[in-house]
Image (cartoon, rainbow, N blue to C red; front, side, top):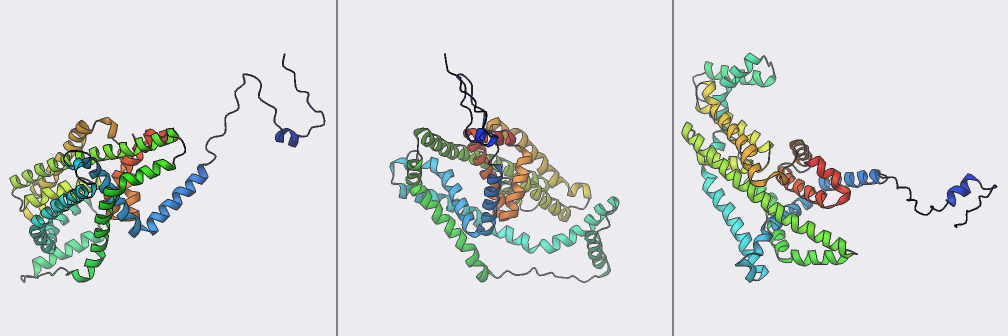
Amino acid sequence: MARRRRRNPNATPADAAANPAPAREGERPAPRARGGNRPLWLLVIAAGLYTCYLASSLILPIVLAGFIAMLLAPLMRRAPLRWLPRGVSALLLMAALLGALGAVGTFLATPAAEWVRKVPFVMREAAPKLRDMVEPLQQATQARESLGKLAREEAASGERVVVQPPQPDLIEATPRVLGPVLAVILLGFSFLVYGDDLLRKLLELRPTRAQKKLTAGIVQQIQSDLSRYMLTISGTSLVLGAATGLWLWYLGVPDPLLWGVLAAMLNITPIVGPLLMALLLALVGLSQFDTLGTAMLPAAGFLALNAAESQVLTPAVLGRTMRINPLAIILWLMLWGWLWGVPGLLVAVPMLVCLRIVADRVDDWKVWSRLLE
């Protein structure tokens, strides 16, 4: 029989706390209090967000280059690129990507520049119709007063007023744009060439075999799932852009190819991109058609096509495993749009996909995975 431990009658509560009684045989130890490190984690997250805001010019090119490398890395493992040296494969992939983007930009540069020059005249033609939309709703705001003033001046004066949009200083703006672009290209190429070596060294720092396996699995799943997600979104966005271009061509809107490509590009950013595209098509419709009902057809048709794409086509291709809560997407877009502006909106959803993948694989983060579903 086990001997019972005699209790000291002169022991104080402090001694009892310093020397706790050993657990009895078969008795489970008391569980530790969970959530004790939550204030520390909140401080770490706040410090990380502040660092992202303060050093955005340094961190953002690294993030963009990392996503480009993760998207293109699975292609380097497939024939015929897998038989080539890594430097040659990375150079071919980056050249193909830049060539495709350059071809699209060159093809659409002329019609886009024409529409930019016509923006003041589009607003002048849309002003009376916008005023008719505002008045029944009784929204006596400063915007309605300015639009009404523009309409009255146009009716009172028979002279044509030519509005010159401000000309940007391209020489001054080129270094600010060219520097980050070159940094993203160089970093993306470097990640493609040396990314596997960096991952191998990272795995060597992990202390146990289980942690090495977990880290390697997370990185491989991020590469495959993120590549699958972005390729799927790009494909469905191209379908949406083609359908939008055909719809605008049917309505007789000028440059339907330009608006179709713009619809495909903006659709990559969920919720915010389609809403911005619908607003642009509403302004174009107001400038091209006489009646209010006809003017809303371009935007209404695009919204219907976008709803079919986002609610039917994309879920059917991706499945439920990659679907994310729309409220989480909105909050995430607001956060990174506030921190990094337009580039933050572009990288927000891929970062959220990576967070979802990590949360699925790490036990302590399972609650975040459930919140993102």
